[in-house]
Length: 376
Image (cartoon, rainbow, N blue to C red):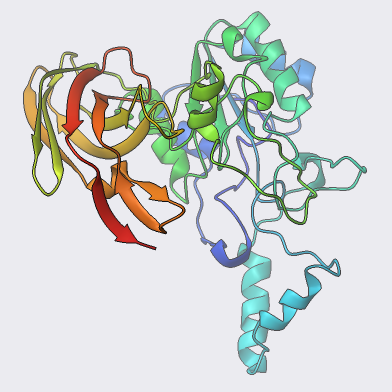
């Protein structure tokens, strides 16, 4: 086990979302507990060279990299633009409680050591706020490259709260797991997935691009900025850029097939299909419904998520599912009349497991006349 975040307490953001759990299972601890009969090698003070040698001599290497609250998340700071927010913090009115809280902070709070922090452009540490880059720290990327050269069985675990661009190293490793900030028992959850005790079923709530240039312009230091309609998967689809991992993408230790699509239109739109688990493991997937139009008079995304449903299916079995979409999920705003409406015509709907799924089931929906919804 290598990587700067393998053995540290790292469960999420600070500020208003701070959680100071008294007991946290790190990735390293979870792996050691679950694989108690295996020799788990780890050295928090190891150099790059010794970590690579350690990986080379092992059966496989687990590389834990990513971010901490010190590099992404909430940030106020003490600049003239934000110092006024200090007035929103209640005054301490009970000295005894204040002392008790201070002692609790000392005993339970986690501050990342300097060697774990990402340096900002001006050489100072970036304490929270927006990330400076969508890519991993240079040292993390260097470690992945070096380990992958000597060990073919590499699992990269990424700890982060949002998308990470992986294009410079992903083709060198067979497995990548998005670990998120997984909470006080995250180390055990990680070990359960790596061992196969648990079958993963998560799906991305965003797109991961191949390059930052495929996303809208971003200025970390901007005090204000205006973004238009095109962002994320919608922007990649419009510009013809293939994502590294599309919106809604997820993996499992089993496979699913969809069949027999149906659609029923009333006050809502109901989509039905059969979901079969064709693998040898019980598992879960997320059925996702997307829609778009080829001949729209309005500029709109190629695909827009309008409904989804998580479904658990035993190995070899088939279940029938139904997803309901509201007409407001098809709606566009009429700027002149300050109202929302559904455009008349043919709508192309897809039932799949992620945006642009080549195995998705096509379903046609015809709206015979414009539907007026509500004013706003």
